[in-house]
Length: 165
Image 1 (cartoon, one colour):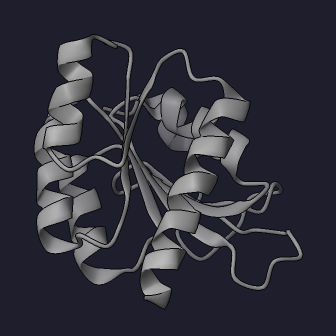
Image 2 (cartoon, rainbow, N blue to C red; image 1 turned 45 degrees about the vertical axis):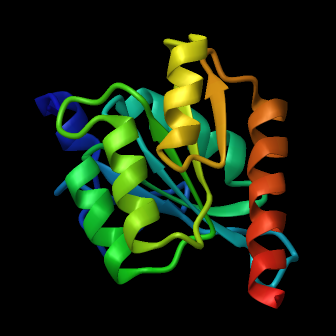
């Protein structure tokens, strides 16, 4: 749940704070516009019930991708059904829907989108469970910025190659 201090910092949809990001308080989501020269940057959805983790990943990835994040897995599922994303990153342990369940649901409705599971609980059993649930890859926390950029880039290239076939 967002504290009152955080809620006061949020800007209603349609207006932009000085940094250029739009913040949507209805489920703590922000979409970052891309300034890179690529005319069609990859669209990345981050799902984590920890807003700080979402903001960190957004900061790392926004240089190359159009990043949207949600702190609610239910809201993320609605977005996946209505919008097109190239890569989805999800936390493993969330309060509303677990990451493996979310991964299975996303793969069930959009098997073309690679899902990367990110977790602070990096056991072999968790990794195997993620891959069995349909995850493209499994990354442990703390997330290394360079590593996550490479992982997302590889997943995006994989998706684009699939689209060509």
